[in-house]
Image 1 (cartoon, rainbow, N blue to C red):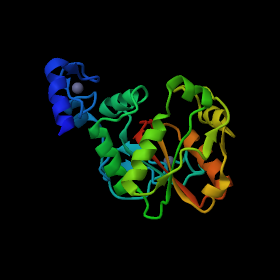
Image 2 (tube, rainbow, N blue to C red):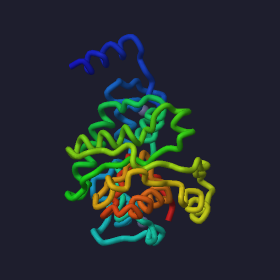
Image 3 (cartoon, rainbow, N blue to C red):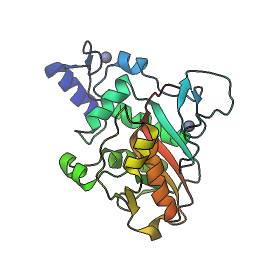
Length: 243
Ligand SMILES: [Zn+2]
Ligand SMILES: [Zn+2]
């Protein structure tokens, strides 16, 4: 009710333009992208052709067979899934989430739905991918903490925001970096501070964007070294990588 009222007020006095197409106005609840741009965004519905391990996107719909991208074979996590492709509305919402730690209700609903439908039933702990202390200080918060807390609440399980830390400040991954450069840059960059809280747990590791999977794999590696039972990965978006 309050949200609807706030929306009405906002669109009346501060008509906000869609962050994607810049043409149509949008509302607080829809977030920074308009309905048309949301409709244009590839949100996964379970029929897409994806890598059965890392979720790499091959195409919109296809025959149900196990597919592999063959790039994630040595990654430490068991399986990764996402709400949709990193484009249009999802990209705009994730950009917003880096400055405002409060996802619009449309994004909240999508995260909740994806996590409820996509998580394995034995997941018993949610852990966000950490930022370095330096990056966290610059930003004031970690957007993965916000997504992880939402995911945990949806699943009715605990979130642990403290046990996995980033021990090294690494340079952000750029599109031009190859697989080896990406993997080297995050190798050994994560550590578990409270191994007794991680041992034996089946963990959903959460981040905003899945690009090559190097970060997720390095985080999973640190958690498995602390005797976690298994690591699955949930990200809001999946970068479209050409195969
Ligand atoms: Zn738009
Ligand atoms: Zn893969």
